[in-house]
Image (cartoon, rainbow, N blue to C red):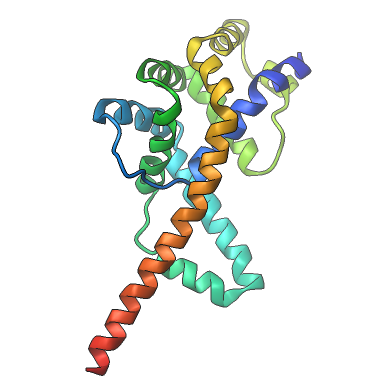
Length: 199
């Protein structure tokens, strides 16, 4: 049971965790309804809140090693919100999952079983603990386990598994672009302010 649960869900959870952490807008906006379903899916398990907590935790670590860099990042992202993380992550998902697939994912994460499963699993991912199939088996009853297994065979889940390599690669690339863009914008703002003050 343990190995089968880990094999089925570990890639999925990794993708969800990464998706919460980094992304940036594309030049051509997606269909608003499609984007809304992606945001509904991400919001249902608090992706933005998770991303913000991970961001702050990483920033605290950077303060210990490179306080100047951490201070610059803090300033550049001062107005960035949990909703911003969710909105940006949603733009990656709509590139690779259609509206029906995202709706299926959202429906599962909004159900009592799916939501509890995701919150428990993502909490483990945030703390760096691997998903333990035995723990899952102990904390869900037979009917709930049936729901989870059925979800693992759904079109949405299968499509997500197939898209994971591309999604994760793009999230990493766009996370880097996001950081560079925010830093450039911050430096431009502060440069203009300095010019104004000196004049």
